[in-house]
Length: 463
Ligand code: FDA
Image (cartoon, rainbow, N blue to C red; front, top):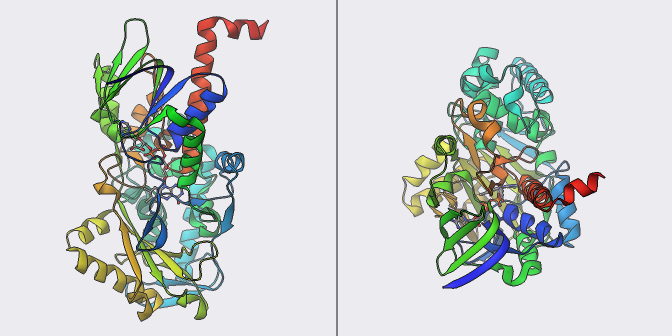
């Protein structure tokens, strides 16, 4: 058994945990990061599959994600633009295929007007909402006790408009059906990205990627932390000691520290035995957050054939298995890569098929948008985060109906010296790598402040 002592033990070497560890290390504290997997990066993971470099997890960076962009600069990582020249494709529920330019779906004018109106309503609500405290919105309870599905239909009688607006937030973001989360959760999502308009604008949201892959953020941080990051050490027990400190018992390694950061998604908190047990509030609260589900499909072709046809690769098919497709070609790669997303209940249906039938169904759905060449990729891969023991879904966690206003204000409250941090608890950058960076930094700052209080140095700073 490896017995270690540190100022801080971080559970989880995703972007949140490693950012926190790096900030604390720079401030002079000793930190040990315990990571269950045999790699760092958590939900960011860049790998070579059949000779193709694929971003299996989080990858895109939008202009507002300044915390992530600052960290990329600090780590010497560069970005490149997503390919977006050419027309997009929209598929009607009846299967009609339309090519269009700009960000507005080619729907009948009345539906377009209703979509614009709903976007304006959601923009207004997002503007009124502090992403760090959506539960403080004057209408928080009202908005949190109705599903997005029903709230949209109470706002508009245009079913197509409701469906299209819902998909940006449901299949597109929270990766749960719109009946499974509240309107307040949807407003938080929009507020965390600056506005709802930003969420419906793929040129904003999916602006850039990191050259060489997003996982490098974690890899470079881990490099700086050196032997402070211990892989293959799932934490099984987190003990609060009589002296106010903590002991983390992982496979083969035990770390005693003054503070712990649980930098894992909330759905995994209960994988750890807490001694003594967590208070009632946390026991209850943690049962109300769950991860969504989406299959991220990667299809690599000898050439980006869609570009020759004047297409950007961007496709929306709200009624089919594959809901969204984008050009995801790597930086300076002569081959062309498409990424496609199969969210929530559509993913359930696809996973009921065997692998060969699922591949065929997904490629046919892509071919309906981009033509028969889409049926013959040279590399095909499905990111299946639901099967990953140390994640169990994608992209991130959200509360069930009513949970956000009921528990949200308590989600960051430490229990003794145990702090909670992950992109799932972020304000700006909620559910995104940027939110993970922000959570890492904020949690490190809170622990440093607590450290100063302990030594009386904070008082000195105020003299
Ligand atoms: P994360 O889950 O990454 O890290 C937690 C770590 O804790 C993991 O390494 C896990 O193994 C470890 N762990 C769990 N339990 C443990 C235990 N008991 N003991 C020790 N270790 C334990 N974001 C974005 O900005 N742009 C994008 O394009 C996308 N796209 C996207 C696609 C897909 C398919 C996914 C899955 C996710 C995205 N995201 C995204 C979301 C983004 O990837 C995500 O929000 C952050 O990477 C989460 O970082 P965290 O560090 O908070 O958690």
